[in-house]
Image (cartoon, rainbow, N blue to C red; front, side, top):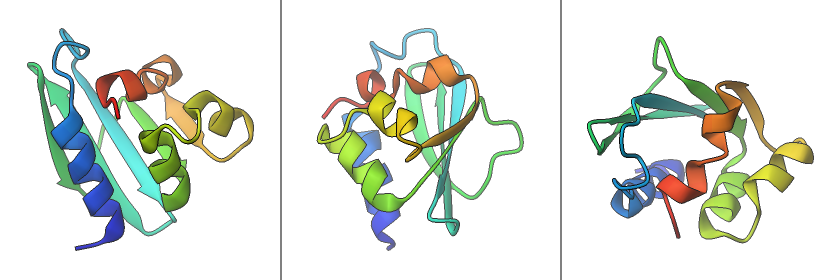
Amino acid sequence: MSEAKKVFEAMVERFDAEEADGMDAVFQFEIDDSDHFHLVIEDEKCVLQEGEHDDATVTLSMDLDTLKNVMSGELDGMDAFMQGKIRADGDIMLATKLTQIFPN
């Protein structure tokens, strides 16, 4: 299992259904130009899938260290975005809720 997949599986375990109440979204992650995963949030459930989604709500591109640091709370996601460590396409406001939906 890839290290990236382990990070995403940990995120799914920390998923906060209350924070995602009413949310219907797909978070596409492009990690290190090689690993692609997406999280489908629907009906207060979160499902991890490998590969690219055809119609992601938001796409986040970053390296694995950035993902780990943001999800552990060591790095603020907005700071990482402003520093160019995270690139986002689509619903940028949804991306700002990532650490609320997947608290550490």
